[in-house]
Structures are given as structure tokens and as C-alpha cells.
Length: 115
Image 1 (cartoon, helix red, strand yellow):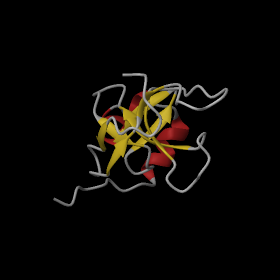
Image 2 (cartoon, one colour; image 1 turned 90 degrees about the horizontal axis):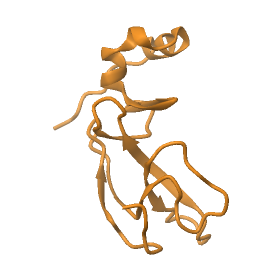
Image 3 (cartoon, rainbow, N blue to C red; image 1 turned 180 degrees about the horizontal axis):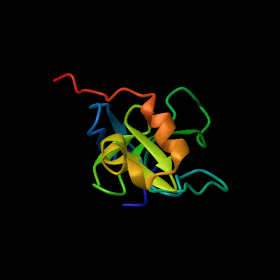
């Protein structure tokens, strides 16, 4: 699933925490039409609709490395600490994260789905 024809919709990405939904054009670590960019995780990516530049793209989200759910990169839904984690998994395994991550998370309120 790592290849994509430029701009071709490959599917729909839906965050399993907040329900953000958007078509994606690529899933992987090396988005098409980029020169020296390799992402640190496999991501759902779309071409930036606000830029005529083919090399511009938006990262929508990735998979939680613990539960494998699709999560957006929004700070209320996930965090990247060496890998992507959804906030429900972070809260469940909070004692396994560094103190700085624990402190930052303590400032946030849990997100509730509105459905």
C-alpha cells in the first residue's frame, strides 16, 4: 500500500478517537513527489489542498503502536513519543512514559466522542 499515483484517493482515514474523517492519497513513510523526506512512522497522508506545490502534503494520522487503532495527529487524540500512541493507551499505560509526558498529559482533559 506504499505506492500511490499522485493525488489519487486511496481510501478514507477516520480517527477512532475524535471521528475526524478525510480521504488520504498515500499510506507509508515516503510520500510521493517529496525529495529527501522520510517520515518516522507510517502515516496516512494527503496532498495539501491549499498549495499548488506537488511536494506539499498533510499528515492526517497513523496507527497507535499499542492498539493499532487509526488516530489523527491532533494533540487531543494522540502523541508521538518514539512511536505514535492514542491518548486512551497513553492514559492506560501512563506509568511507562517519562515524567515530562505524564505532566503534560495531566493538564489535558479526556476527549469524549460526540455521537
